[in-house]
Image 1 (tube, each protein chain N blue to C red):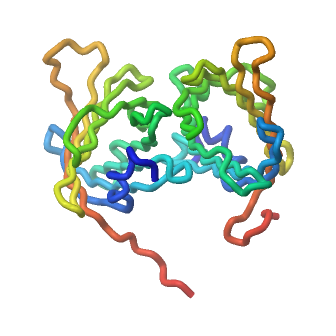
Image 2 (cartoon, rainbow over the protein chains, first blue to last red; image 1 turned 180 degrees about the horizontal axis):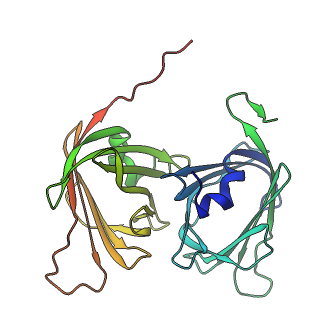
Length: 154
Length: 155
């Protein structure tokens, strides 16, 4: 059974894993898991990033995607580094899901997701609103990952 | 698991039970409590069912500490859309949450621990602009008991 929300997320459901560059400039490894609930009325994303050099968790969070009253996507997001925020879908190219919202500490968070063939491209950036104080944009290139088989899914 | 959540760690697992809507309609409950965000959060997945297994209400909540250590909860309701709930002061063995939904309602939800394997669940919604003394219709309550889901035998 498909829903307007699932028509956007169906190709992303499952596990994804790949390298990303952390805001600190260090290299990270990211794993994401998209899961639908209530027959496609909500999609949950669990994301975890490790610092490759130390093996320590850099960031862990979970978000719920649903359609708002105007038909645009809303994400209720929790990230242990900065707490809760709400991201709202913004205008972008048709094949990009772009979201933006305000964080509790005054920063604005921008996230974009684009599925290109079998690669999921995730970018995110924290902006302070002060020239020169924005954090670097992070880019993660993720491949589908089969947790059962412990390898990239064919 | 982080300190504000430790008391809820005992609830992690699967729960099921029966209850009723305010009009007397009998319902079945299923709830799954799990850790999330590398044990920095607790996820509640709740479903209530009526009749021939028709979903009456589905609720998925993420409860976690803010940077100031106060607990907050965000989630999704199949009836009310996105929800943002804040714990309200209550006894140690009670989790009481209340807050607005994107559909203009005020949602209240609570879990009361009766004993290690029994929880009482209540839920209610009313319009955010409801006048004082407004009686909400459609509230639910029920008793949940810890269950062990069937798993297929291993090879």
